[in-house]
Image 1: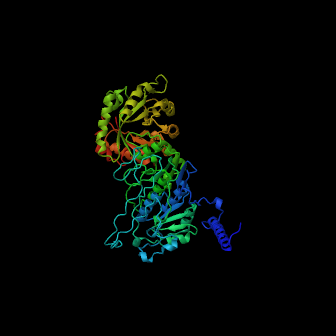
Image 2: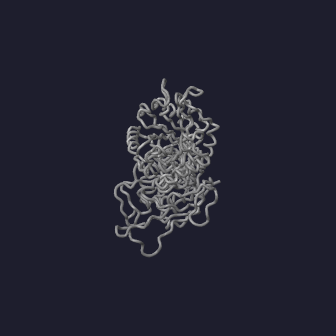
Image 3: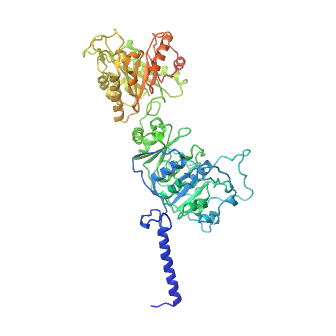
Length: 637
């Protein structure tokens, strides 16, 4: 079959054009590698969705300190590639707008630090849109289906740039969203709250107002080699520039289309969701709930210079389907809201923003404990300094040994509450009533085991421990060992110490060395024996993933704990309290307090005992709380 010469020529040109386009598609959009290895080459026929990935390690701490590096580090952990990447300048107004658009188009959000000076540049002096390879959204004759262009500026005079006499209004709210832990659908009125459902978000066309064209900041040196590398690591086809000129960024990214308006982008869909990945970020302000991928993009608190990194990371995590958990402090066990969130998520992968969260192994253990959801009386899983204990001391079977045994169990619970109540108004942290129960009682005679110490049975102690637990109390089991091993006696009470709100106390006053008899000297204990209990109790706590436990060391003479400076205080599972037990006049007690607190190892907490009869006079709650350092535990005997 033959064709006229004209048709043959046209056919040949068309074939050559197709071939040229094929070659260009394989070589023009990146660093010159072959097409099959290019994950960023998204076909226009494919759904444009990012490709997410779970972090390779179960726990990753992102060590970066700057907002731009943290945002990039997270994006590289959660995304293999993304057809569209949003890049915003690290300023509150730019991050606010960039966050809204990243949520809208399901894109990771990167930041660039505003290096050098920034100044508003009139629209007439900004680079022409042609330099970005795309027309502005307002000029597009073919809007992308499913994507609403950003609203145009209203006609008429525009507001003047901010000045010292006329500061700018607060930026629009588009920061990290606050989510509840319920699975109920979001309310129909007002800002929607995100649930922990794993359903991917839907493109609703939500958008924040664009940056005023005449006030787009032009950072000097903002387009750095690091930024170019971070963008290319995500293999995008398109980049949306927010707060920096698209043309200048496009010149640094040959082969990648850079636009300044979302209307010039293709339609995108939500990527596969990483619903069992948690991102821990430093919390700011009051406790906030974890934020999950929103069913509809919600409004949020205004972005500030201190929260740009958190905002960018929260948006990137939400797009990937991960749950952001704000944490007050650097240990999730200390934040009741974070504990509740982690218990609901039970993440299989955890990322943390910033080296303040500690090593990956340390954080992995802390998250595992937090994910149990078990909390101490007063909330959280760390005892001090976030709580203050006020305890009745004694033995249930011996009224002469202290206030706890002077009445029955219900009356003891009521009395402990009465003792603790005045302290709450004096304390900046929750005050928790407590029992300190003498579990092994020093004897004047050898007793059946020849140890000069009587062991109170588990059957006798268990009702006191269980009912105190039900009443919201903390419980401490006190050991007066005589000639027995403190470690051996501690192990007798392992079934009770396996409870999350039960700690231990060592009473060196009643520790007898070979040849010593009771009441003939003040006892003492070697630091080696104390540390053996420290290591065992910490190991039990870690093995059972329990909240931190209290270990009390009673002391009113320095000689009672030999080589005290060698005390092992480096166990994350224990809060060690040196408890000053001196009695008598307040002048003598103050001298003892000063001596004990000055000699104690750095890192321990301190407790104070008030004697109802033997103090002259006994301090009031106000007087007790005036001690420096302020005691975290106060007991009454």
